[in-house]
Amino acid sequence: MSNNKLLLISYYWPPSGGSGVHRWLNFSNNLVKMGWDITVFTAKNANYPIIDNGLNSVVDKSIKVFRIPILEPTSFLNKKNSDNIDSSNFINKFILWIRANIFFPDSRMFWINKVTKQASNYIKQNNVNCLITTAPPFSTHIIGLNIKRKTNIKWISDFRDPWSDFFQFKLLPMTSSQKIKHLNFEKKCLKFSDLVITTSPTLTKSYSLINSNSHTITNGFNHFKKNSETEKFHLMYSGVMKSIQNPKNFWKVLKEICNENNDFYNDLMVRFIGDFDKEIFSNKDIKSIKSKVKFEKYFEKSKLDIEMSKANVLLLTSVNLKNINNIIPGKLFYYFSFKRPIIAFSNSNSDTSNIVIKSKTGKVFDYTNHIDLKNHILELYSDFKSNKNSFNPKDLISYTYKNLSQNIDVLLKKTIS
Image (cartoon, rainbow, N blue to C red; front, top):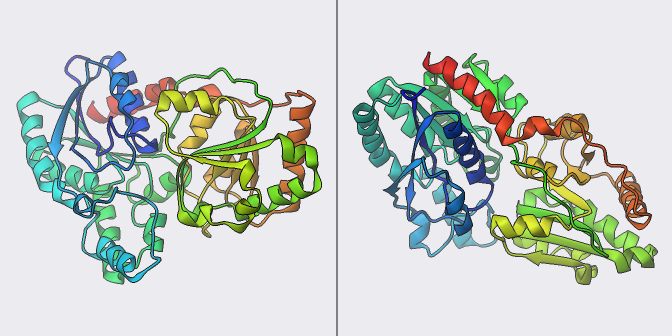
């Protein structure tokens, strides 16, 4: 196994915080324990939207990390890279048009040539067996395509999100020619990859039409955490929430129950920890119960674990767009580690819905459901008041990063054999 050397190219790496970094940070930590020799090429002085310095100490010391300088346009605007799309005025609309149509495949495009050259040289000089690129940003896959053409190394492309069907693209003022360009490069990367990994079964099924060697490896969690008992009925959410994810009906239901049930009002505490779109703060139903709702900035992972352990119910919101069924929020698996019931908002028959139902970790509602949602919240509140625990999830252990890494280990060995 000592000759099996992997080069991982990932824009997101500690001290980056947020969901994008945890997948390959944890896979890498587990794979080195299985005997893999791992080198990571990541961005130097990247304009990360979230910083979590505590994650630096989590990286296994045997992983070699090289940071390649990156030029990012957002740094000149004194603005953090963000997934939230703000088209509230002319200037923002113009910036969005530039973002959608000038920078291809994304604003990290200026990193492509530099990393391609340095990674190709590193591969040749160090007899690296396998290249892994993980996206978004999709510029990393173009780097992978370039390196594959230069070195003919075994290449694994990891899609944490779909590319041409990326829901963000549907919200941007992207020209039809730019959309076609994304689709064409997506197909090129799929065809040239020796192995394709996705995070959702629906996306795997779609990509299998182009590359039959496509497999699903979801995100995961490390271990189960001990919960804390609190006097309040805590409904909690962690991570980013864009306006397209805002569960407006949830806020209406909470306001309604608060107006009807004084005990519920007194016991309720809603905590949202992370980065939230302006539209969510200005929601009229949230304002009507603002003393019951607390928005908090992102915590470092170690502190977030402590705060999230206080939850009685965990909230999950997927994308409120028709026919978007192939995105599973990474926080779903993070939530699994707390063994608390989940209220999920997603399209019916989505991958998210199927996993929640199969694992018996909660209930899924579409964004228009009102009566069933209200009744379910009242049921959960009744359990809280009576100190009843009827939560009985199924087969969560299969979603630990340790088990998922064993699946990747098998795929890696097949790829380089």
